[in-house]
Every structure is written in structure tokens, then in C-alpha cells.
Amino acid sequence: MIDVLAVIGQRQMLAFVAQGLKQYNEISVIQATDRSEAVDAMKKRKPSIVVLDAHSDGFDELFDELCCAGIPVIVTSYLSRIRNMCLAKGAVSFHHQPPAEDTQQLVSFSHLLAEDILRRFTDYNTSGLSALPVYSLNGFSVIAIGASTGGTTAIEEILRELPADIPPLIITQHMPDGFTGLFAKRLNGCTELEVCEAEDGMRLDKGMCVIARGGRYMELFRDKQGFYIRSRKGEKNGGLCPTVDVMFESAACA
Picture 1: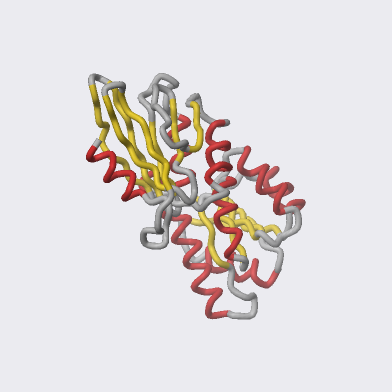
Picture 2: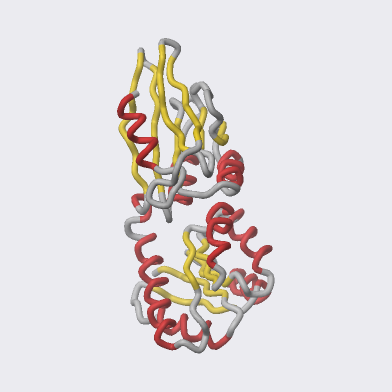
């Protein structure tokens, strides 16, 4: 059974979402309208995952507490502009919140949340994540990982399990400028690896994990000394910069 804590400030919306989630046999729902109620509820039963309304009282504090405790958080909000910030801070996903009075949209919203939750507990580690095989030069290796929406937490789970002497990793997470630094800082605090944002000309060494900088493409190159990266500006590819495709194409040619 997946215990879902739904924290939504508007009681009407909370009741509607809870009812929608309960239609799935695998899901049980705990309800709260703010941080205080959520903390009280978690004292009785630790949730498997939390659906957190960004407009509920105590959101920022509760969000940080949940992330520090390692509890997955799905953030909902009618403000689409905060999506990337929430993902960078540790949310596993973000869903746009419809108006409380729009019953039809709320039905679809509840189903999307349920599908997201079920997917994360069935095929969680492959969601939004892809990896290129290791490339070697004179015994020196690089691992390239690419991820889009839903990949931030999967990346964190992978890095937590890696030893400090692993070959260097390069990671492109589809995320804009201003948020990749937060993402790298968060990852650096939860792994034995040295995690940083990409800098043009940076040489790769064991134990390094380099995150593509928002607004710049990261490419892999090699010479007689080993592997290094280029971090460059460029026109958006499919509305994105950086992109996984650019990194993987360069790695395939390195």
C-alpha cells in the first residue's frame, strides 16, 4: 500500500483530490491543510510520498523538512513559473493545479497525480532517465547521464550509492539557468562525489560529477591527457538548453 500525504490548503480541493486518489486500490490517503496538520499526521504514520500544495501555510518549511527526511514530494501550484525552482530544491515532480471550482479539470488532475505516484513506485528508477555506456581512453572512463522531467530524484538516488573513486560523471538535466547551481549544490551534500556545475575547459578526474550549466551546452572531448568538457552558449534545441542530445552526441564522438 502506498501511503500518500496530501497537503492542500483549500479544503474543497483537498477532499476532491483525496477522493480521486482513493479510487486506486494501491493508494491510501492522509489529509492535511497546512504544515501543522501535516506534522501531526506524520507522527502517527510516515507517508510513502507527499503531494504538497505550494500555496498551503508553512509550505517552504515543510518542503525543506520533507526533502531532508528523504520523503518524495510532488509539488502542485497554479504558478507554473515556480516549477523549475521546486525541482531544483528536491521535488520529484510538479503538477499545475487547476481552479478549485473546475470539477472537470480536478478529475483529470487527480488521475494525473495517481498515475505519477503509481509510476514512481513501480518503474521509478527509469523514469525520465537515460545513460550512455562508459567510454574509455587508456583505462580512463567517463559516465554520461541525461535526464528530463522526473529525473532529478532518480539522479540523486544513483549518486548516493556511488563510491568516491568512481570514474567521473557528466550529467545533463533539462533545467534552465539559475537552477542548475542549486541542483549541483544539493547533490554535493548527499554524495561522496565532488559535484559541481560545468566550466568551459574543465578536466575530468575520478570522483567528479559535473552538471551541465543552465543556458549552456555541455560537450565531452578528449586529448592525450584524457577527457575534458566544453561549456558553451547556443541556440535552444527543441526549446531546451542544455540538452541531453548534445552531450550524448559529443560523448559518442569523444
